[in-house]
Length: 301
Image (cartoon, rainbow, N blue to C red):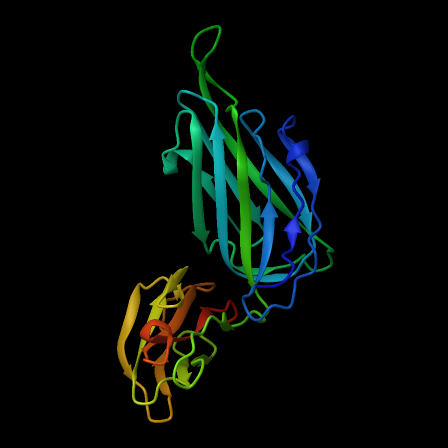
């Protein structure tokens, strides 16, 4: 990890009395961590929703290639009865957040969730000719109340987010069809390397090549339409394992290539994650793993 994590300063002390506030949060320059080893953090811990809806607006200047996101939220409710609340982070690259109804939060108590998300993936930067970009926290919800003239309305939820943090994993690789996210796990020949060639346009020839793997072994190519970033066999499994290519024989030099024609009908902007896992007695817990490739279908095919 980078030794210094860019962080939006907490503005919670100025939010409690106003449902909407312009909050200036200039992000520090990103560190030079290898590949996807840096993080960009938006921290609004201590935020108390005011009224039944509103938004926090912030300004950022950092440029980053976002490859994964995580939202950590802990809400302390003082409401004994029914209530609802959602809080969404919105950046130029996407929007995601937490919803009490989806999570089953109700009544008084302390509620926590961690949400892994790829909704913010993309190249985060000011628009051409601009020095900064806006980010938002949008929230809405309430407690049902009986109105004086009859009928039902909503009042504010009595509670606060003791933790509300969006952490973006960023890659120092340039945007393109293939992004190297790192996280290889060493084996017999060191860290296996996975590379890709091709432009990922429809019907275009594409090759995924593995090198520095255990000679004569087998590789299992894990392909996912999302990422999970889970500890596995002493390393990190990054693709959501929706599909596994079984098995790919590794040659005597430690390599194997998987050649194919990129499918027709995949939409621009679609992202796929690929990582090879190799049974290897020299690896941690009997396995080695390649770095992960993030494939992004371009807009200009």
